[in-house]
Length: 393
Image (cartoon, rainbow, N blue to C red; front, side, top):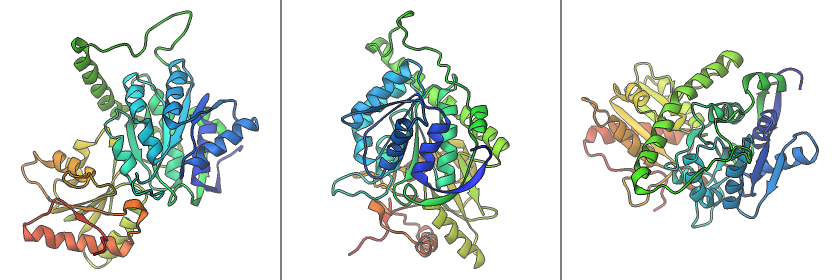
């Protein structure tokens, strides 16, 4: 492409094209539904000579991420992708990649975990990996998936960060949809994304050790340093998103507001269903209801202070989770928000709903009903840990 243009493209393919434009050096992956189209297209680009890259086919996702660590350690720009059970198989290695500060970018086509076997979308796979030390954010649609792939390499490889990133996008309902996207030129991407220049790399001419044994006398300090690093990455994330917006006119924030002016009831969600949530907010606003939407884009590092500012003055906060924390207090996002707001002198009532598990539909009209029901729950003074949406009797 010689100039930016709008084009109809499957979202998975758009992510692949963004990786091509970022000139990845190594891609290692294993196919799994609904992620397969991402790496399948990348394999084609490499085979056809459109991307000068080493594509490593492996026998499992565990091996894929292990190969990615090796390539990142020698200073190669590295990408992988997965979903569901594939991400679960990677989790052991995810802890290693982040602790060793390997700036790997991984696209995750979110899909429910088994059992029972289910290939449709929810966020249980992403929540499985929430404590692995990776930066995590969620996109709503194809344009965001394309843009955030470009930003991910810039953020991860910044010497102030040097941490891996998972880009979460809904399986099938986003990944396999053809959308109208604005694609940047290869030249624009090169101007935005500098070459990867790691602080340290494996080099036979200058031997170093990476990932040695952490004896009890140093392990606590290492974990603390890791936590401080991911918290400090927030400043760079904001900086890169701001620059992207200034250059290309599409702006992104950790916590995004929609029609929240004067709202007494706020709905909180993340991922592709926030488009339906906006429709519900619009329909209730048209009826004079003071409701709004808070869209959580950045999940790790968790934007505690942003959420305190966004939610602290509301009367009722409704959190919609797409994952059940089995045996726990309900939804993981609701739990985090309860923790973030706990020390406020005046806290809103927090009502937790869990739904859209395993790809079950939740329509715009249902979100409107949830908003109205939450107000009745809050007024009753008896708020359950959570309610499951759409459970059949």
